[in-house]
Length: 505
Image 1: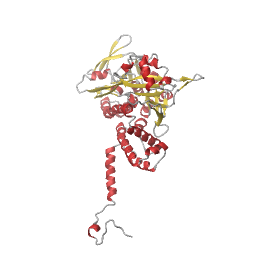
Image 2: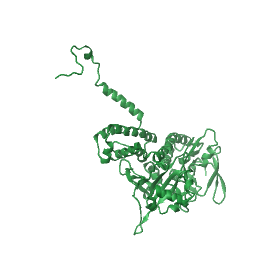
Image 3: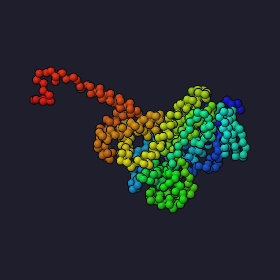
Image 4: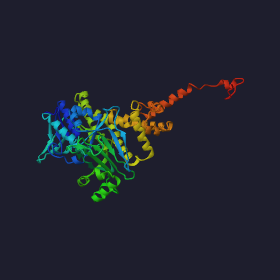
């Protein structure tokens, strides 16, 4: 086959699979290589321990273009609220949505999405040749070639592709080849923490149907002060809750420590998370097969050498705490497709513009979940943090026509991440102003009441995403307003009989 319109994609995870399908629709012939087995025939090695995906509007366009959105939607669980379960077992809910009832996120198990995408790829069998159990190695940047070892031991040299996408994750074999190239910058930072998987299994009712043991359509957090760990839960459509336990890799109350003895782990969990006694009857099963996935932050530059191109987690990896790794990868599939149209398939123009569009954005995307993780782990119970959570929830619920939180912009709009992150500073400043100028705001929150003072203040921040610019404009406006009522008082200086501050009837 001639080089023209021949592409290779290494990695058949969500990004590689969606990209393959979208490019096949554009007429490209794809060789897709995946080191794991076919998910329709065998369990992939990490299915049981991969935390759920949370997807929303940022991934919707890619999933619709791929033709799988409706099926994925059918097998997902809608998220309407976040429930915080405190150390004393008290609990409360906060709003988890955008402006409308349609602005929601959805939770889906990785295994389910992989199977859906694998079936979709089969619909393009004339355009996509899938090679499962195929180990790519010996990537040569100069010749733009690589070798593949197949399950039967046969080794092939592959090349002569118009473009080669590396969608094979954080430890991409293509990126490992890039590391040897002059001018390539690479940063991989491990936080010292990781996550492992537990589960709240579904209950079976008297009719044999699977039901939730806990509140439906809910994202769960169990924040604990002083434990140096975080536990969260995301629902699956079949009634079970996927639990992510984030803890240190080594040291006190760490994964290494708990793996020594299940009884130690069980006693710790039952003491610090009492509801696990009755919500997790299968804890021992998950403990026995548990592994840890380390939290990391990976950045690199550039993303391509010639027509070898990194995409998704191969180009930028983050911890899963903001749920934006999957969504960001889906956005990049759409960007590539649109750039193909813009430049009529000229990869010499597509690759640099793709990097220019995404590099700064993804660097900031990478850092955001680290901040979120630290907030829940270390700062959740601080008084200022408690107040900020309550005020933000209050504004989202009652003043949604004039207020957007940072999380709302990130999760339920396609707003540029730079603007979203700028909104965080604006939001913090707004909260401080409300606390100063509406001293009874916590009473308003408790009573769930609207208030004109709040409305007047919040309305000034509507659509504001740059705090420095906002404060500068506000200061100039205040000065102009003040100047309307000030004048040089010549009367005081020269008027006979002038009396200072002594009005008479």
